Image (cartoon, rainbow, N blue to C red):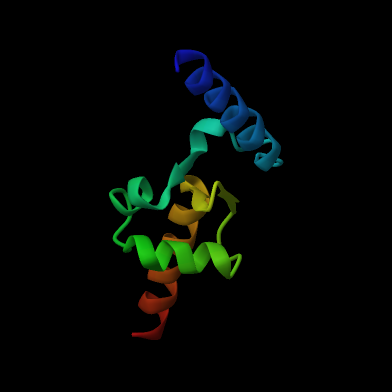
Length: 87
């Protein structure tokens, strides 16, 4: 069982490294939607929607979205600035 979990971890890391194409990003920059929702004031569902709509850097791994937290924070800051400029 230990070998299987080790192999799955290696596969996950390899797949994740393929996702990270931006030189300014790293594997550590990507989080699950659940983890990301604890950092920004968005729900897991909304973060998944942003990922599906390609509004943030993301990837679908094993049927679950992972998102770049720096990309998500940038999206959030831009949204705050748009709201501030409107009102």
